[in-house]
Each structure stands twice: as C-alpha cells, then as structure tokens.
Length: 213
Image 1 (tube, one colour):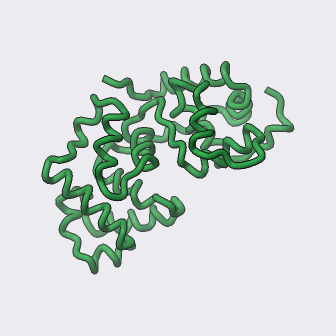
Image 2: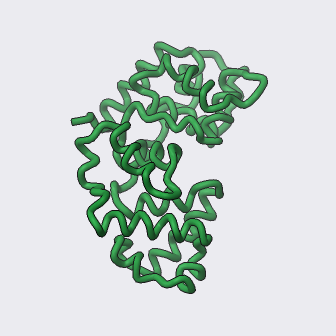
Image 3: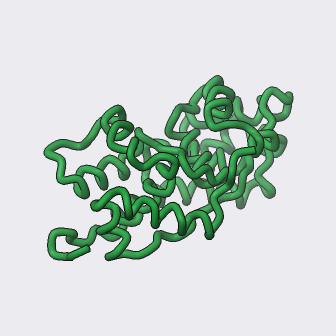
C-alpha cells in the first residue's frame, strides 16, 4: 500500500530536500514548513479540482460554495439531479458540467471506485481517471497530492509551480513540464513535498537574494 504523507514524514521529506537542493533549503530556512494542505478523498474534492482548472482559486471556490448550498452532501447521485438550468446558475461552464456528470456517472455505475485508490499506485489511478472526459494530468496530480497525500506526485503542468521554479532557480524562461520533470529528478521520492514548498514560496515571494541559508 502506498505510504500517505503525514505531518511526521512530511517534516522528514522537507529536511531531505533541504539537504539535497540549496534553492529549496533557502525557501525552507526563510519561510519554514509550508502548511500541511489536505483535502478529503471524495467525489466532492474531484469536482472542486475540476472547477479549479484554468481559473483562479477564488473563482472556483465561489462556484463550489454555491454547489454546496444547492446539494448537500455533494455526492454523485445528488450531482446527477441537477438539470442544465440549475447547474448553469451555480456557475458551471457547459464543459465542466459535462465533466462533472461523466465523473458522477462513472462512480454511480461502478466504473470508478474512489475508495480503492488508497491501495493503488499513482500511475494506475492516473490511467483510470484520465479515461474520463475533462480529467487530465493536472487534475490527477492535484488529487494525488491533496486528497491521497502522495509524497512523490509532481503536477508538472501547474502554472504556480512553474513560476516558482523559474524564480527560485533563476531561469530566463518559465520551465515547460518536461523541464520541470527533469529539474525535479533530484527531489525524488519527495517531489510532492517539494511542490508544496514551492507553492509556499509562490504565495509569499520572499527575496531570496538578500537572505543567507
């Protein structure tokens, strides 16, 4: 069974990263440990991540809050009761309504069993979820990181991560996903922990050049 991130092994992962990568060590020494961000492993969380695709977190949160106010709890069965008019008023785009319904239907029919993911490898989970319309690598990686708490998941297509890496590594251009994956090789098996640390940097943006390690 894949090991889940806990506050204990999270702290250990941070110390390993700081000893292997001087740039991450600077962030860690200036900002300290990032928050131990977690989400429930559930259909509702996957819907929230779908809402976060290519929009601001604040915008996605507003839509998700309206969804919670409309159907509670947010289950596949309840989601499928929403007609086109109601789901549009909540704030779903036509595309994301399709994605949400396909995910809900796949769970209701038993095609996807989210409860089985705890014991599955990351790539097996990726293969299952990516069969569904609207779920790509970014959505899978965010679910692996936050909901399943996988320590080595790397959302290489995440914009905030790319911006943080460009700043921290002093790159002339924003790194592409393949370049992020190459840079992150040194972080294995703690790429998910490194991601959280770099997001921590992205949110605070300290001036690393004026700080000593």
